[in-house]
Image (tube, rainbow, N blue to C red; front, side, top):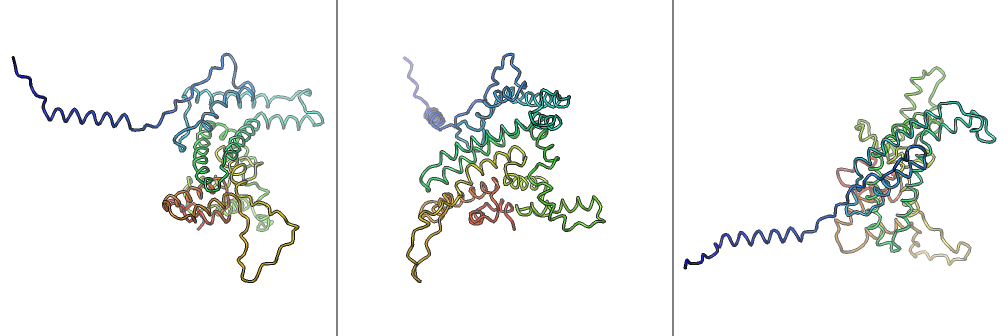
Length: 371
């Protein structure tokens, strides 16, 4: 009988090594991949027939992009390419069809009761050319932001750890929706800004500019002074002469997010403005002091001043920065991300909390503050 060959030791160790590698690769946690949302079937319905139809087609995509849970808060879940193209086509057709309809004569029966036909037609054109969809998007962002606010933990110590991932997730979704609905920015927002309905209006700067205008000034000189005034406003948000166009657009985005809700701004700034109004502003609000009418004992000369009431976010930041032990680098990282959040949603540079947090911004992002 032939002798049985012993297994080669090098072969055995190679096999063992392969087995170990395979075992390691199997046990390594892999981030679950969220499949792109497929294009929903609309049957014979036309998504661009009305705002109701268009919104019914859009909302599943918006919910997927902004509300779906994900392990990577910096990246929004995707939608299928065919769905993306379908949304672009539906929005384009909606604007085109309703713009053409608004250019025709307005029948007397369509006029609003109590309004002249001319005003009714002007109102219809405004709504048909994108205001209705823009306002619906604003309401949608408000709903998402309120959900985030209602989910805030009761313990101030947990607030920062909750808020930063929520904002990063919301921001990633807002940027994705802005790209998805870029036609709204190009067709509606741009025209509204050209019509003096943007974040900085002529009336906002007219008084300051009027004081510098002389009777013999040409139109070009007046326009130059208006541009200079706009530059002065942007300097409040960190603009420096010689900044790149991309940097100027970023800074203007901060100013847009800080604008009141009646101003028309690009969709990303619209989302950030809603996050400020419905999440950040309530957390920054200082609670009212109770017992205003009660008599209080006057403080002694050497007594410490009683602490002033703070908003929830200010208390959370104080606890974060003054906590003992733990990872100092992690605390600095969280403070820096909070500073970026406050700046992005339009909290002004002179706000006390921004002043405290801006010093924790990363070195390559320090240009985002005023110098």
